[in-house]
Length: 331
Image 1 (cartoon, rainbow, N blue to C red):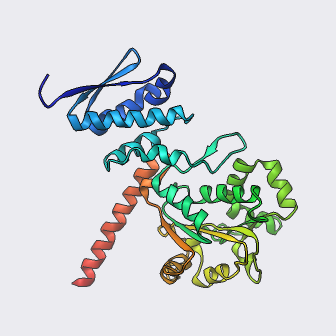
Image 2 (cartoon, rainbow, N blue to C red):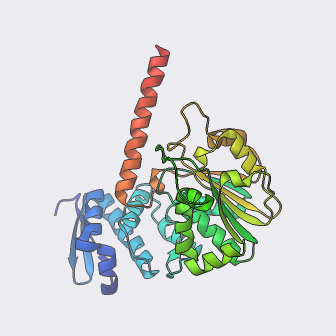
Image 3 (tube, one colour):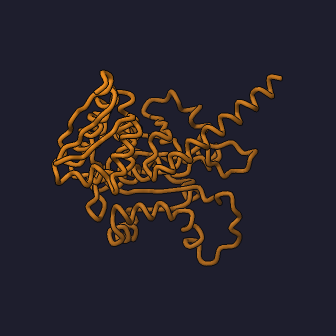
């Protein structure tokens, strides 16, 4: 065996093999490619062949995935790719630390937890601050984690009600006339919020609390003129607010309330000439105490790995366009 090639063994108990290796050993193949190692499975142990650095990182990655598996997690491709990315920063142990923070469980008993360092920071800031802005691309769990935090606070009697709101604006399409009463006209805009509520609370509990007025899902325009005391308030898709709407919303907040504002600056549906209320708020409120700004990135995407690649591709494209425009302006 060459001097710069070494061999290490990792013991994987039989009951965790299938979970850690993935379907058709897809997780093993990901780790092989990431660290340029060869992995051979034999009698409950893995033999890893490669450079000292590659084998060490591969071994530590498997150890972290085993720790996650022992905690009852179903290992996903996202778990594997994120553990690999943290190992590049010599910080793979953070994966298990993040996993210890369980916010609540869905109606089916599935635990809701932050899955990345960015998400963990977001959840911690929601706990610590009165107003938290969660800003980042699609798939980073901004809205879903906010909903989980709101429902947990409501169940623990930390707040008396939950208010969920969104600006009612079409996503780049003209929907035209929508039939039905006012509720059925605004429901399509609020559907993603309903979906998360059903999944976490269950439809029966949601309907009962909605009938009692303890949960309210409404367009942003309904917030005008109200004072929202003792409530957990989530403003979703905040990039589609105008500066006037954002100011109106933030000045509704009363005593005993907590607010989360989520948005993605790259997915504005406002007219081109209109400034986003989210971007103005980020500039105006940066130094105000008890307001946190949590910037999530493509590293925090927890949907299908392809979504992460799409987000990264768009980020790189937008950077190139911005740089070209800057060069033109300098000329």
